[in-house]
Length: 354
Image 1 (cartoon, rainbow, N blue to C red):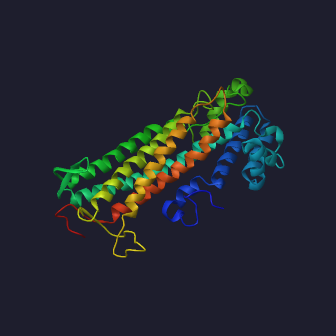
Image 2 (cartoon, helix red, strand yellow):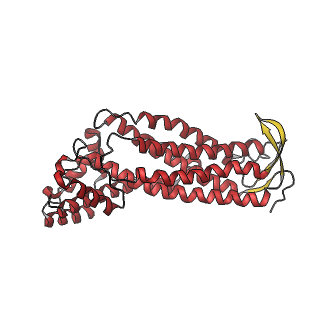
Image 3 (cartoon, rainbow, N blue to C red):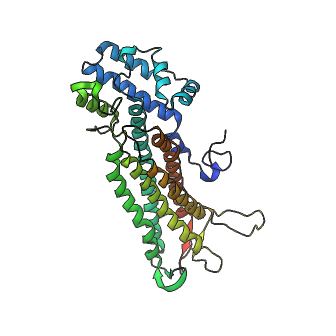
C-alpha cells in the first residue's frame, strides 16, 4: 500500500530513508509503549499502588506480549488511540489490577514519542556532524580558490570558496548546539492520568514519575505536558531549520553547476532520458525540495499547539500525521547532503580535481 513519497515503490528511491523509517516504525512505537506499560506496573508496585507480586507478573507479561497489530488498527478506528485495544490484549495475559491503572492513553503515546525523538535526534546529530566535517574538508581543499560573489543573483565582487562554504556549515554547527539545548525539553516522560493532574497517584505521584522516567532514561516532569506542546513544535521548527540550511546549500550548488557558470564540478549526477549528455544536479535539487516540504509542514505543527482544555484529540492526532514526515525529510536531506559533498571534485576557478 502506498502511503507517501517516503515509502512509495519508486519515489522512495529519491525521498526515502530506511534508517529513520525504522525509528518511526510501528514495531518501534509499540516497543516503546510496552516499555512504558511495564515500567508503570513496576513503579506502581514498588510504591504500593499495585500488589508488588502482581505488578512484577504484569511487567513480565507485558514485555513478552505478542501484539496483534490488525486488532490495534480496528480499535484505533473506534477509539482514536491505540491504547484501549492494547490494554485489552495485555489483560489476556497480565493481571488486570496491576496494569495501566492511573495512567491514560496520552501518557503511553507521548512517552513513546519522547523515546522515538531521542533515537531520531541521535541519528540526526550524527549525520549533521558528518556533513559539517565533510564541508570542512572541502574548505581545506578548495577554500582559497577565487569565486565570483553574487548578490541578488548578479555578479558582485570576487570572494573565496571558503566564504561560501562557511555559509553552508556554520548554520549546521549552530543547529547541533540548538539540538543539545532542545533535547531535554522533549526527552521527558509524560504522566498525567485522566485529566493531567496525577490525582490517581495521590502522594506517590512524584515517586512514580521519577521511577518511570529513570527506567526509561527520560527526564521527570513536575506537570504533565498533555496540552503544552511547545516542545514538540520547537522540535518541528528545528527540523525545518536543518533542512532549510541544507536547502540553501543545495540551491547554491544548483546555480554554481549551471552550464556557462560551472563554478563546481560534481560526480554522480543524474541522467536525462532525452538528453544523455546532461548531468543533472539531482541531489542538490532534492535538498531544495525537502527544505520547502518541511517549511510548509512546520506551520501545521504550530497549529497543533492549540489544544483545548486538558486534552485535544484534534491537535494531538495532527502531530501524528506531520512530525514523522518531517523527521523523514530531515534524515533524507542529511544523507543526501553528505553524498553530495562527498562527490564534489572542484569548486572555484583554480580548483583541481582529485
